[in-house]
Image (cartoon, rainbow, N blue to C red; front, side):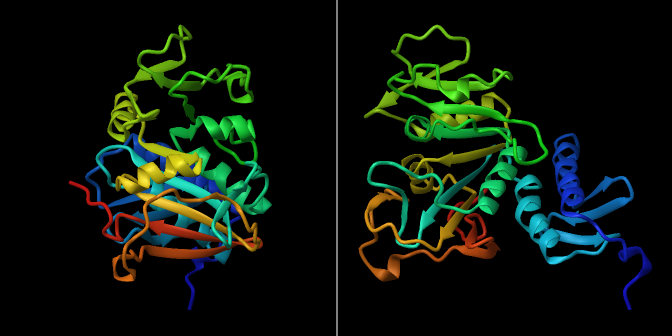
Length: 294
C-alpha cells in the first residue's frame, strides 16, 4: 500500500524547480556526503550519490517526471573533482547532423530543443565551435525553460567572427571567445590559447574551465568539437538524439578514425528515452569504463 506521504502529485515544472534547487544546493554543500536532500516548498527528495538515484521522496513519480530526474540529477550531482563535460548531438538515422550545405535546423523535434535548453540551464558553460555560430547564428540561451543563462564560449582560433552575431548581442554580456594566442583582439570577453593546426588542445581548454571555476560544461556543437573531446576520452556524458529521418548525404555527426575490427567497437552504458518523435540516447561514458576518475 502506498504511503500517504507519497500521494502528492507533482507537475513537470515543479520537478524542474527541484532540479534547479539541487544544483544551487550541491554547489554550496560538502562533496563528501553520501546523500543529499532537496526541497522546494512542500516537495522534497533524497538522492543517493552511490546509487545515482532518488531513494526517498514525498510525492508521486509519474513517467515524465521520473525521466527528468533520471537524466539531469546524475549530471548535476556528479562526484567528479573537476569540470564535468557533457556533449549533445542531434542526428538523422543515417548519422548526419546537417545537410551538405550545413543546414541543421531542425533535425530534432521541439521536445529535444527543450531538452537542450534544460542542459543549458544546469550548465555553467556552453561551448561551441565557430562553425556552429557561422551556420546557425544561435543565441544559446535558456529562453524555453526556467533557469539562468550560463557563460557562453566560442572556439574561434583564427579570430574570424565579427562580433555582430546574435550570441554577442545578448544583454547579459556573458559571451566569450577563445582565439589563438598570436591573434590581435582587444575585446574584454576574449581568452587566448596556443593553437596547433587551427585547433586548441583539449587540455588547455579544460585548464581554462578550471581557472574559471566552472563545474558543468555543455559542449553543444558542432560535430568536430564534440569528436575532439570524445576521442581524447574527456567526455563524461554524451546525449545523442536520433531523429527518424534520412538525409542521404551531409555532415557526419562524428569525425573520428574508425576501428579496424568489430571486436574493437565500444558498447557504452546507455539509457534510452522517447523525446517526442525522437529517441534520446543518454550515454554514461564514466560507467562505460571509457574514462576513469582519479
